[in-house]
Image (cartoon, rainbow, N blue to C red; front, side):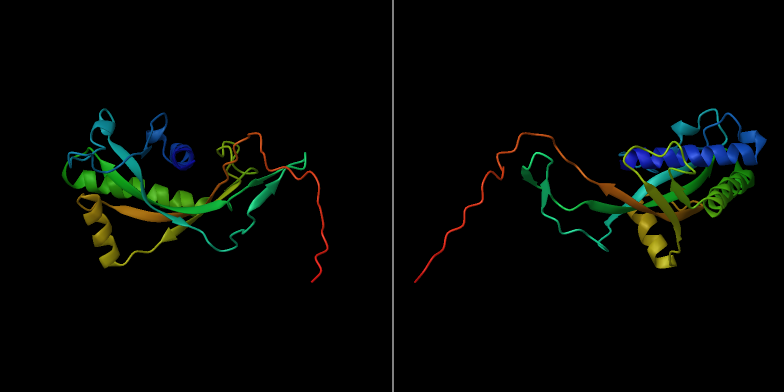
Length: 202
């Protein structure tokens, strides 16, 4: 579900940028990718072949949303059988959106800032995604809410150090929330057939 959600957001951002700037129409600007590959090289360089600018969407962190967590331990089926059921797993994901460019010198930096500004503008324009305003929302996702995360200089330094990359113009967003509910259909031996009561006297 995480991959489908990030791909969905990339498509939404691409549609927004295409309407905002005709120079990006027909181009895939927002791309889901890591910033650094296993060799320590910039992973997005190959993605930029034949294209000047891009927005790299990278998963930074996943956290469990514990507020309102259900404690129901069983699921009762229509046929009267029961099965163990863990509570839904509600997740918030943190994504880094990084502006990159293949241009040279100052134009490279300015283009990176430009596409990053488009991404920030997109989430200001549309920060809630549901079945009403987003027909292509992934199956199993009812609603997403995007919030910008303000990082301190120390947090920013730690994140980029952990990524193994040199700092690029970027912004972080918290996406709430993904709900994991895995139910495997199988015959259950845990069927309630009869209820016996017994009076025990001393």
